[in-house]
Amino acid sequence: SSPRDKKFNIATLIPSARPKVYRYRGSLTIPPCSENVVWSVASENITMSKEQIDAFKVRYKMNARPIQKRGGLAH
Image (cartoon, rainbow, N blue to C red; front, side, top):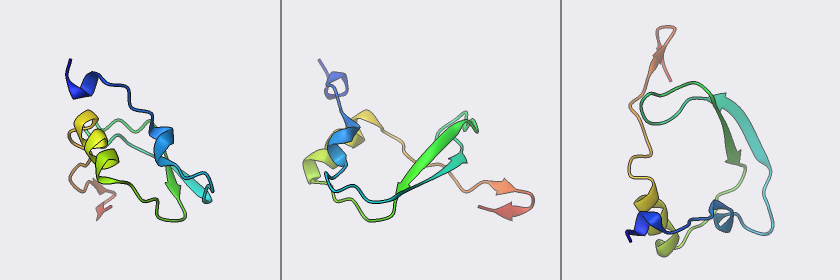
């Protein structure tokens, strides 16, 4: 089995003392970049170990997209 087949629980990245979370509507970071996502952003930095980052990278190869134009402005 490949590392991607292993279960990855994103809740393990959230500290027990949970920071305030802000939410906003947005789009996927990879094609088709559909605008049907609700993003959650912590008010404080959350640290990750090298092992956690490696596990995330195995499961999610591309986690970004180029800046998009909207209404003549780059966001």
